[in-house]
Image (tube, rainbow over all chains, first blue to last red):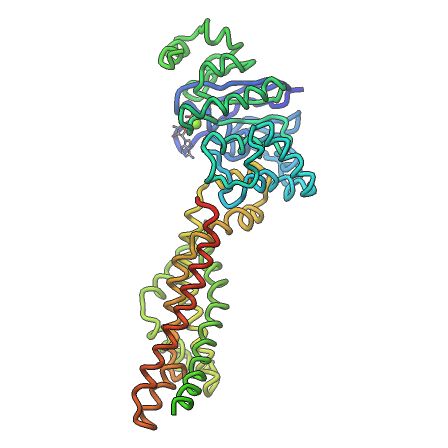
Length: 252
Length: 219
Ligand SMILES: Nc1ncnc2c1ncn2[C@@H]1O[C@H](COP(=O)(O)OP(=O)(O)O)[C@@H](O)[C@H]1O
Ligand SMILES: [Mg+2]
């Protein structure tokens, strides 16, 4: 069964139809890269998948359990316990990190495990230390976000998301807010997660990264999936004119 | 003589302090409730609340004191505050709490609206519920943001307590002024200023200390 299955997802803001029927599946262990020009609806797709935005129609299911189901044109969203269960399947890493500035690195990471998952503080801290060491931030657990570089903050945000053991982790342009010299350290961490078969959906403008790390690439254009496939196919043998133009302008 | 004056002024200061403390106790939580009203998605409530805040902030506290004290008697024909100094004191507290509640609400609102949407969303995708997001993520950050404007407002309150005398509630200045009539002494009135200075000085130091304590992070 697919970890994530999205079917015919549509979303408009007023008259602006941003998602015009998106369907795709993510299998366990896959790394899916979503590429496409700015305004094509990539963030909106991720925000619908993570329940930050409500879909107008279509369905979203995690491991066969529906976050939202389209019943005869009526959107039926999961409620309460069902919703929190489904929500525990996914995590999201934001473009601008959104760390909690008043909490230390350690407190940022254990906040949800302790208060949402009701994990013991000792257990949550143990896990946080393991994650921080994976992220190469073992010496930063008592630092505050304002004391960290952008790249370090984003790695803390990744650790914070991983602390809840999500089955699938979404990234919305995780390196776009970073200075060029800092993108590498974040991409390296994500690459390590891919090597460990973490299931991920990554919206990115880093074409070389998408090509090398993704197992599947989706090209979005004006609210639809214009082309998708294996990285080699998508990058070296693009079929549609739109993808050719996009890759040309992204100058890979 | 100094001892007599000092004792009298201490008594007056006690009254002023009571107004100050009770106003804070009432207005700090009331302000939060008003702030929620003025940010409500239910627009009649939002506009009603904002209209009240506009009226209270746009008119002098002295006028509000007079209207709140005399108004019910003139309109309803009965003095709802009860007779004597106790009734006047209650009216003063009601007027002060309402007035400062409105001022505080705007400070809270500014603080809450200054928290980025991303903070709420981060909490949401981590599975936190609305209460957890508000009390564990938003409020602590609001607290830090509002300390400087709150400290200004609270120091203004110290001095505003003197307005209570317009409806005959005896506070510090009243006690100081009394020496002019009884003994022909003017200096006790000036001396009341020392009380205000010392008290607002202490508050300034206190808020400075809190601000420094909260400097361990930046937003
Ligand atoms: N909350 C919103 N309200 C109105 N329009 C929005 C909102 N979010 C996104 N949009 C619009 O949806 C379109 C797609 O945006 P987005 O999903 O952010 O694209 P991308 O992430 O691919 O750059 C844009 O035209 C944007 O203006
Ligand atoms: Mg985007």
